[in-house]
Amino acid sequence: MDDATVAARRPAVTGPETPPDEDARFRAVVQSPLRAGLLRFLNARLGEAFDIDSLMSAFGRMRLDVDNCLGELVEVGLVQAVPGTPARYLAHRPERPGLAAQLDAFLERRAAISQEDQAPSVQRFREMIGRDEKMLVVFEWIRTAAKSDIAVLILGPTGSGKEVVARMIHELSRRGTERFQAVNCAALPDTLFESELFGYERGAFTGAHDRKPGRLELADRGTLFLDEIGDLSLIAQAKLLRALEERRFERLGGQKSVHVDFRLISATNRPLDQFVRDGRCREDLYYRINAFAIRLPSLRERPVDIPVLASRFLARYCAANGLPLDARTFSAEAMSQLQAYPWPGNIRELESTVARAALSAPGRIIRDSDIEFLHAHAAQDASAPARLATLREAERAHILRTLESTGWNKKEAARILEISRGTLYRKILEYGLEPVGKPGRFAHSG
Image 1 (cartoon, rainbow, N blue to C red):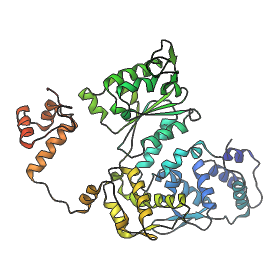
Image 2: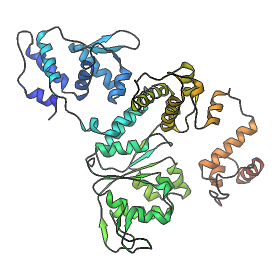
Image 3: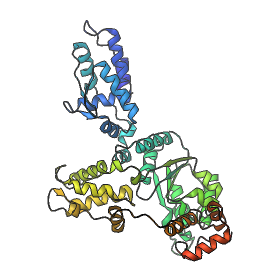
Image 4: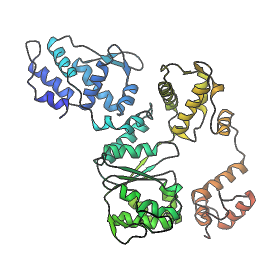
């Protein structure tokens, strides 16, 4: 039973200074978990004012929700709005003794710790939230997905936090107390996929001295997370699909079926819908894993968050190394350099870049010369003035981009470009275009 419910069932603290309708209004206000949380948060930091962006980040809630709840707290007289741009809010002690007594009684009661507040991955995800509401929308999708056992597909570029999201969904779900099994599909060749996923019996192959349970078996009653599922071969996809459909499998070298009950979460940075059209991903598997999709934005899509996240990671670096939280700070030039960089590695690259800069800085101020990017060429390209492409360069880039988006299906690429296949072949030869990787890897006879 949470503190709001307890408050609703206790006898009202009424008196000449607290009319019954006012008492009921107070109890109604604190019944909302967000209003109650905001009230406790602000009263724990008396005299300190916070803007809506800070409170959105702290509570992981949308602007409209935070704004509405603050408005009700201000109307009741429990919070004070400080005029300005942006407006800020701080705790306010009611002048009426009865209402003040109600507030004191509420604050003295121990706050119920929600499942969300207990989840380590939630705290990690909140570090990835800045001022852009795109990540708060993702947070709402995560909360929705956690309410059921629906299969979730997490889409996003490398380093955007896909495994953090997968762990959040698991920890907030009814399976949160059970095991979370993560499998990196990109690191599993076909020869190891079956033994890793399904396990094996003793004597199944040379070196199999004992029975070994697979990840599916270990995920029973819990969650199976398949990272980079777009890298699975068609053979591995067929074996996985059978296990997903039947919820049973046989260990390698075994004959007895093992029944499992698990929740499936997958993640990829690949265009699976295009892979389905190209025949590189089974359509039936795609629909099986993509019942509910969550797309994570890249850091380039929310540049306003870069200063917020960089400062947050810097404070965490200082805390982890036993330093005061303000032992390191960015110069204006250094912050401008961070904002100009395109961040191909996203959140993960930003965090490691901040840690390296904090370590290499000789003093308290981190200068732009202390920042070393993993992709130096990207930093140079970002800082250099943009040069307009020639018509030939633009045509070459557009044709190559179209070919890559279709997996080098020339018939489909010609249709999109609205040219004949003969013209497309001539352009490929003229510009010396080749697929990435081995020649012919993505080529199609069409």
